[in-house]
Length: 395
Image (cartoon, rainbow, N blue to C red; front, top):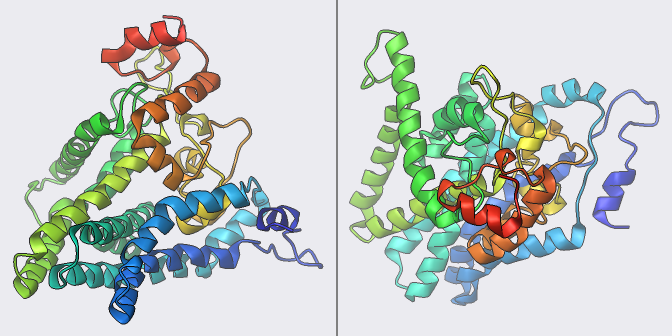
């Protein structure tokens, strides 16, 4: 019996019917173990001298995981709502997110030190740098999970994790900006129909940074404080990043500079990639009073692919996350007739990096979901007329 069928047939409660049993409870450890693939490559290379290991785990992330998703399929099962309070209060789920913090920190430092202190062919150097940037992508995902929590410890751990890649503004921008404006033309983190990921990044990265700064500045002004005070979370995280990066450069010299630049950029690009695929072309309706309708599950692209969800704390059940952002990863639900991606995030990242392939797959899927009224689609303004004609949209 396949893993997905095993989960589907799991009764969920013990024979006495007293306590709910999450059939994936211990499989979530994969979200903690998967990032260890990043330092495993350099470590095994140093032990064996075989350069194969320097690119093997990059292939695992971007080829292996999509293949596993294809083999194991989707898991559309939801926990019973009566069990959600138990799941939310179970310290195990919180514990595994905390356990990932030191793993991410160790893996990041191990890899950047390896890159700055060992001479390898530039292609192998690049493979390790991209793998390490992907590790920071896991860190951004953890920062996303912890950053939504109200406990100060969770928020500080999120801030530290995000500071590894110099992306400390993410929690501010995401929680107080993206969640408010998601699936609208006002959101720099929601991609538009006809927009390539390479033009999206020019809008998303700077747009997210400046929106976060303005949000934090306004918060501090309401408290009667300067935006340049030490209560500015962006400055605190920037300070953490500056201390870490300065120490690394001082200890390992100028070769550390390009290492940190490439690794940090690729980590940020993983967030850009996720933002690009999560809301592509979807649009919330604007109401008569000028506000947008509340965010609903159908305003996000969803993925129930089992394996990739198990290694990213179920981030891919993004529809429920945006409709109910307070829910922990273990409680996120699937809903009928959601906009659905044909693969998990890692597979869709590769598709997004090839715009003609992305448009061929996703434009048709988008129209199938929302219909042919151009007014119901978040379209790139410069391509609006072209797309209306190409797909026979109702203008």
